Length: 127
Ligand code: CMP
Image 1 (spheres, protein in one colour):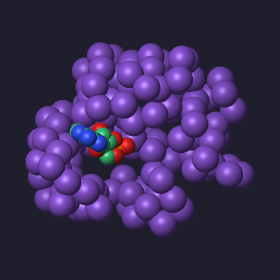
Image 2 (cartoon, protein in one colour):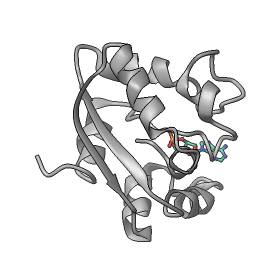
Image 3 (tube, protein in one colour):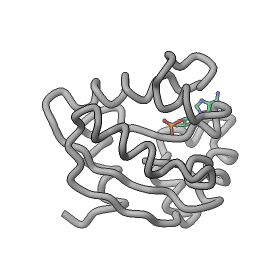
Image 4 (tube, protein in one colour):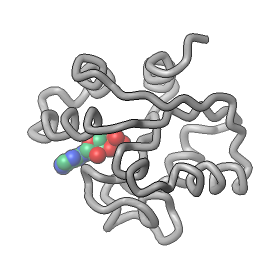
């Protein structure tokens, strides 16, 4: 998911190009704005964390872009491609290294397991 900071920076196209150029198979794209309730549900695993409210406020502050990608070992592949959660720690050339500015404004999110992917994809795609 491309987050509001990256949408505001007008790098949706660059991020999608990077995915395509690196062999990721995109099978769905949808732009939307999360309601507060949706954002709370999307990030409910973090609801006890001190940063939860900040995270919900940020993710509802603008448009996000949900991108469905498919492939062998896709969770590990996309997570290494986007880089560490904190852009300062993200490896050079990763999406968060290139476009993230802080741990909250870190440009993108990627599902951390097949189970979360199934849950998170439903916020964007019916099938
Ligand atoms: P994301 O991959 O979207 O998953 C949860 C998000 O919570 C994460 O990216 C960060 O943007 C945010 N997050 C994680 N840890 C912290 C933290 N210590 N302080 C603020 N935000 C955080």
